[in-house]
View 1 (cartoon, rainbow over the protein chains, first blue to last red):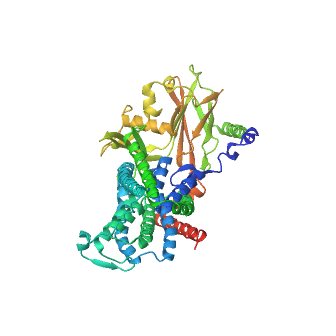
View 2 (view 1 turned 45 degrees about the horizontal axis):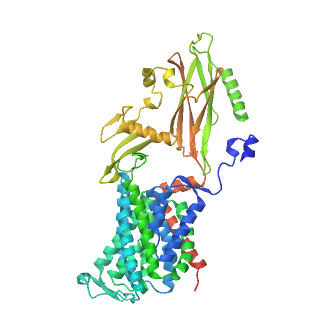
View 3 (view 1 turned 90 degrees about the vertical axis):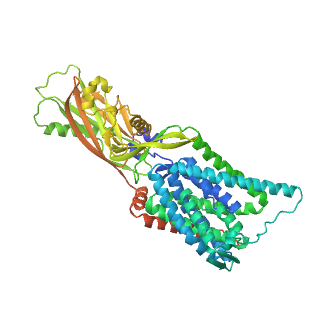
Amino acid sequence: MAPAAAAGYPREFEPTDDAVQLYLPIADLPVNIFVILAIGLAVGFISGMFGVGGGFLMTPLLIFLGISPAVSVASVTGHIAAASFSGAISYWRRRAIDVALVCMLLAGGIIGTAFGVWLFTTLRAIGQLDLTIGISYVLLLGIVGTLMVIESVRAIIRSRQGKPVELRRPGSHTWFHGLPFKLRFKRSRIYVSAIPVWVIGFVIGFVGAVMGIGGGFLLVPMLIYLLRVPTATVIGTSMVLTLVTMASATVMHSATNHLVDAVLALILMVGGVTGAQFGARAGQKMRGERLRFLLGLLVLAVGIRFAFDLVLPPANLYSVRPAEGGL
Amino acid sequence: MRRFSLALAAAITALAASAPPAAGERLIASLSNHRVMVTSSFTGDELVLFGTIEPDAATVQRRGGYDIVVTVTGPRQTLVTFRKERVLGIWVNVDYRVFENAPAYLVVLSNRPLEAIANGETLRRLQVGLNNIPLPQRASVNIADSASDDPFRQAFLRIKGAQDLYREVTTGVTFIGRLYRAPIPLPADVPVGDYEVDVKLFADGALIARTTTALEVYKAGFEQVVVSFANNHGILYGLATVMMALATGWFASVVFRRD
């Protein structure tokens, strides 16, 4: 750069930027391509290790990096679609997907996603989107993280004391089973009402669209504990639901808010699906309860970071942004 | 620099040759470039406004010399300024003002502090300087120009200033005899659109001549294609992103297949 300037070249012909800098068109800011790729790899590794989608880590990391919460949420939906499709293919090969259950979950999931995108658009228009995303993350990650840490610590203590690992036996019927519209899901070998299935699908679709998470870490426990879906089909089924809700969220966010950054999503996807492969191998070498303990700590840490951002006085009380929608 | 001097010489020759007879000073202004292209590697640029003050035979000698104020106004944009307040321990946007058709970019260049060029009344009347630019704002239904000490207006100017989009540079114009030159700074995130450059000539505290020119900032390259596709064909853009996601996921499952 220095010789060019010394030779008196006009400014335009100077190499003004490093090759690693990449301009994100929708996020409208330059980023270091390797930082984004590293985030993708790291989150992919963690998601592969724990068998989760990783949206709940990816979206916060992008926000902490300075990308606006709205663009982060909208773009991560594309990344999760890629990650869950890659996972769904391998579960499909093992015939570990309950297609009928997926379809019933999706009936609620698509509506939930549409509702989530609508709420997202509305909150953005009245200037409360960032706050809502922040509070949602604090609550969700705080509760889930705490539960995971408590549960895994108990499991670790039990195994230290030499007691056998407590197997959660599917209990007898709950009040869920008294609901009408009962359906039989052959592959999962369950017979449940369609209503809780729709509700679960709706909640996952809604939360995913607003927060930029696939929701696997919520969906899997719900399917296991509420619907008694056997572990053989639960992950595969969850991945297909995530795939479809996140793919629809990507399209809906693109159509309404124009906030999906395809360049950002692509780098995250490439890093994510690669990292997931290595994470899955690493995860097989670790004990389940340790893994859950670490994941719980991670979830809590991200939640606490969001809480700090909400509680600490902001550097600037005022903010300026382009007028959107209702204002 | 050489390019600039050549352009300057050419412009002055051309203008001097065609100058019609006029009373008082004539103000001539030209830009080093009227179209600025923003690409992904754009890290900011500087345009040079240059020109000359041409007195005619009848012109009296000005005691205080000449002063020039250049106002560069970017494309208009409706912006919202939010104010946060602590509610139940967390910081929430509680109030806002909508700034209707505010310039996305506003730079005022002068050869010395504005107060020294003309008195406050004149500056207000001519809307010269960041404090005198009208910024109509809307709280609920009524639109009114905000008082210059309004906290929302102050915050708006401060934030735009921190982004290098609103600036007042009191050393921004330099004289070389009757020639003047004013570099216009364009930051990396300069808004796209049409810019108006307004040049005012003052002498002895009064406006004596005025001229305008314009420039255009436009985006080009891959990013612009992506942005316009995303904004104009949202559904197709979303579907394309999903196809890309599926292709990436499928590719990964093929590459890393272990069974």
